[in-house]
Length: 369
Ligand SMILES: [Fe+2]
Image (cartoon, rainbow, N blue to C red; front, side):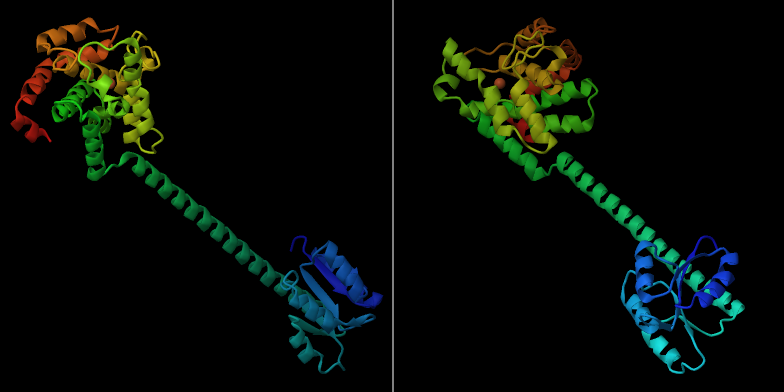
C-alpha cells in the first residue's frame, strides 16, 4: 500500500474518526477536511491519491465538489468515493453524473470501504504507470527519432562534403581551362599536373579518396592567374620587382576565388592555389610557410608544377630536357621541395617520363581523359 494519501471530507468529526481508524492501520496517510473550502485548501498543498467525500457538507454539496474536481484536469484522475445516506435516493444517480467512482452507504462498512479504496488506488496506480510508460516510450521514441535525424543530417553533410558529381568535376576541369587559357598548352598542362600528382600520391601511399580529390583540383593551382594582367603574364623575359609582386598574387587571388566552400574538393583546391609556391625551407610565397606547415597537397603540386614548367616552353624560358628538369628538381630536394615528395617522384620516374613524353602526342591526351 505504501504512503498513499487519502483525503476524508466530512463535516462530522465522529464519521471522520471512524473512517480514519479503518484506514490508518492499512498504512494510508490520512488528511481530513470538514468543509469544501478546507478540502480545496488542503488539496492545493498536497494532492491526495483518493478522496472519500460525504454528500452533505456545511458549506455545500459533496456532488458539486465532486463535479468541480472531475472537471479539472489536475484532479480529474483522483478517484472519489461518495458516502451517501439511506434516504438520499437520487444521490447515486446524481453522483454518477458528477463523476464519482464509487458509492458507499452509511454506516460505512469497514471491509467494503477498504476493498473499494484498495481497488480504486490500484486502478489509479496502474493508470499512472501506463501514463508514465507511455511517456517514457514517447520520450524514448523521440530520442530515437532525434538520433536518427541527427545521423541522417551528419551523413548528408558528410556526403555533401565528400561526394562530388561528374558534372561538378567537369566544372572544376573547365575552371582549370579558364585559368590556363592564355597558356599555349592548356589541356596538356592540366592533364600532366593531374597525372604527376596522382603517381606521386600513389607512391606516397595516399588513399584513393585523397588522390581523387587531388586529381580533380591540382590543375586549379593557377586559377588566380585570371586576375593577373596579360602584360605581366605573357611578358617575354624576366619580370621586374613590381611585376613579380603582382604575379605572386595569383596564389592569394586563387584562394579567394576558391575559398569559403563547404566541400573538401574546393577546400583542397583553395589550399593548393594558396600554397603551391611555398618552399620547404620557408623561402616561398605568399606566406613563407616552412616544412610540414605547408599542406601536403601544396608540396606535391609544387614539385609537379615546377617539373612541368621546366619541361614546357614558356614565354619567359626555353624548354629544359626531362633529364635537366629532373636534375633541377633533385637539387631542390629538401630546400625548395619536400624530400619525401621528390623521392616518391623519382621512384616512379619511368612513369613521370612517360607522361611527359606521351603528352606530346594528341592520341594519348584523348585516351586519358
Ligand atoms: Fe602558380
